[in-house]
Length: 465
Image 1 (cartoon, rainbow, N blue to C red):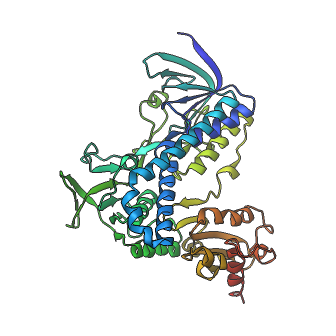
Image 2 (image 1 turned 90 degrees about the horizontal axis):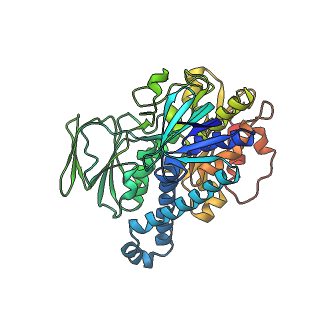
């Protein structure tokens, strides 16, 4: 069987695959992208980031209308179903697919639909949906096959009342109660969403606090506001079994507790899509969760085969995956490593309110013995937040007491994932460009949420002596 030859073959068309494909083709390389699904975009577009954030926005808009027009609340609740809001999310997915398909067409990246497997270090065989097999050879490969929800043995995901973070998007009627097992980013986001719909939510956390990678003050704020919204959080619990019934699901915990709800959502981790790629024969290492082991340049143990995105594990963010793809392609076409592409990537957590963080936390700075100070701006004191009614939240700046260099930015509140980028632009500069004085020597529009930076900077500088 003859093989088609390319400079670079990319496996997967999610953010990591797209980033690698576009960087390589714009650098003059002949590129082929292999996508297992019928449409481009990967899990990010079809089952994770885009549909879940679109659903969250639809729920938030419904809540806003109900609050602005209390006389219509009962009517809206009666006639607006979860299925209607899911339909909105589907519309956004279609628009994203259409847009991203044009990227490949316009840049003349060959798209092949099918499942890829390495035949040798320079050849993959692609089994197309109808069973035909095509061989592709290349000088370099980028594996960007993404991840899927981890499914433990003993949990019957075929039962109509048991879901994971992919299948929950197929739910058409809002339940009265829900158990969410796993209080990571996905678990907290869905707890927030379904609680806004009035669902009674039990959020079961296997650790002692929510999202422990966050600054403690932000983590505490999230816990407080989820509880204020009515989410019951149970820390340091471990599952023994899940018992599905015709009318309910019962969760048995090691502590002896038994929880009962209409539906159960498993949100405790993801697995890399590395199975059946033929990696073992090439000597490419994969961990127990299917994540491919790579070096600082995103190279596997076979130097011309790279892996990026969720299939390599943390941080498992769409934004990080895209930059990792560009990073790998830069190394392929130019032979250099642009570490700045994957350094200091902000987190974006779409609970209600949102959370976004960048840089180090107070805990990390204290442990490292760094002399720092804190500046706060509470949204309730900002004119723009008062006008919009979005007064929950704060912006927190951590900066060096002596050099005034910004060390960390932490935001909790409406549009936190947008607000963070103002500080990111300053923090990315080399000293003295990176300094908190920028925010007091710059005029911000009034009233805006951006003004929070000036307020937080003044608050922090007033603590110096």
